[in-house]
Length: 75
Image 1 (cartoon, rainbow, N blue to C red):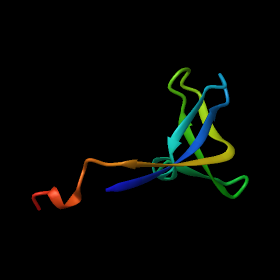
Image 2: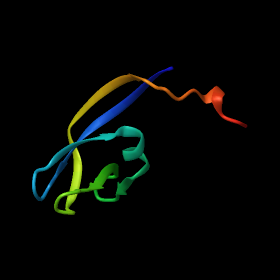
Image 3: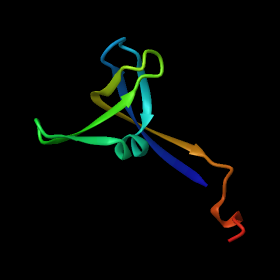
């Protein structure tokens, strides 16, 4: 089964560490900013525990072959 995952580039505001995060997970953690009246994706930096923001609105899509088949589930 061919799976597709979308990633977004996150960058720490404190130390500059960059990391690709799954868009689906990041969307669940989005918060509403009352000042700008927009949703922002904020994650915690794994290095310095600062705030990571969505950097340059970059996205990438990866396709990979999954060994998992939903039909194999017992229910």
